[in-house]
Length: 184
Image 1 (cartoon, helix red, strand yellow):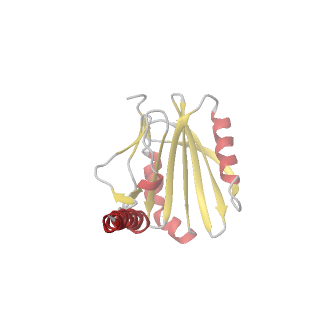
Image 2 (cartoon, one colour):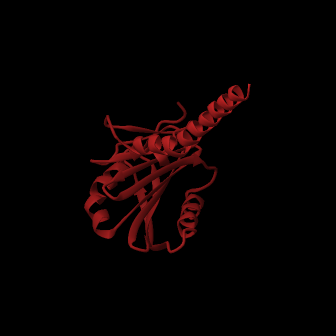
Image 3 (tube, helix red, strand yellow):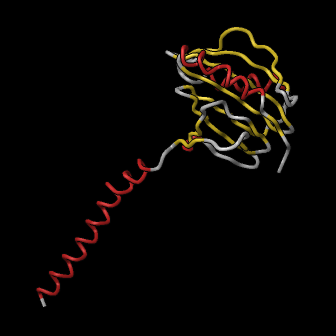
């Protein structure tokens, strides 16, 4: 009887240990095995909320920072070491308020400063917006914001100065390709 109880307790302890080892070592190993970025296929990428874009050459999607959706959507492209983020969200106001909201978001990050003058920008699909630049420790950046339907489309691009200069032409072409097709 005592031996039976010991065997049962040992079996339970081994099961608990196996579960614990799976959680501690197995799940992190599985997480590391799944890539956070993936290469793109096709000429256009559906960001979500009615927005599409032609990714820049050589871009990959960072799946850990990408959230498609019908009302709100986010995509982060990685172009070399440059981060290119598009955020689409409901917005009910003029372009000046949308630009101020994005500038405030940028300045809320420690060390980030909006620099230079803002100017108008227009996509090839006819979206009008505002664009400017910002700096951060060891990084430079650009931003743009567009209004489309009842959404704002916020674009931020940042990277080390040399890397950003190298990739900027492709990223500018991508920003120009942003289109809004309304709710789908």
